[in-house]
Length: 208
Image (cartoon, rainbow, N blue to C red; front, side):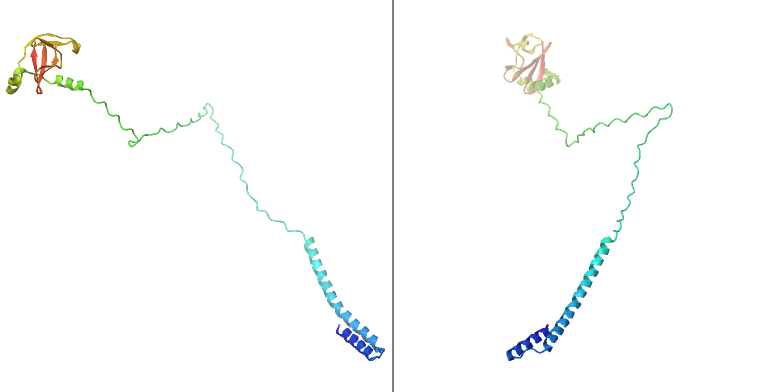
């Protein structure tokens, strides 16, 4: 390119001076063009050769067969057939085992409910306990108590299995069980052959 530029500059200078180009001018221009063409031709050949090599390599890679992929072999164990029990001649097959019942829930002492308290005994139970205690005769009581007991006269009586129907004639007045026949003296109970009196916690009996 530098040769061409120099030739052009030289031709322009000669025109400006009024001189026509000489015979050697075209020859010089042709030589310059040939040199430039040879310089361009060499890089183009190198590029074409490189492209050919790359294309050949790609074609070889595409035509090469792919290597097989190795698959690991997995050993599969054969299924074990169920065991078959064959009874001996004359022997019966065993019976199937029945399912066990669910466990029974046990109650620990901490979980047991508190016992229900027994109802209180009625007041009659206390009276029965007193009746069962031994009853003394009037003469067996302490002497001060004997003198303090109010004197009463016991007459006839009516005894019945029903306590409400029992009556005792005390000082000519019919009295029921539980009545006070004199100050501090209580007719506690009527028995078939005697009456039980109570005075200040001391119990004694009076036969009929």
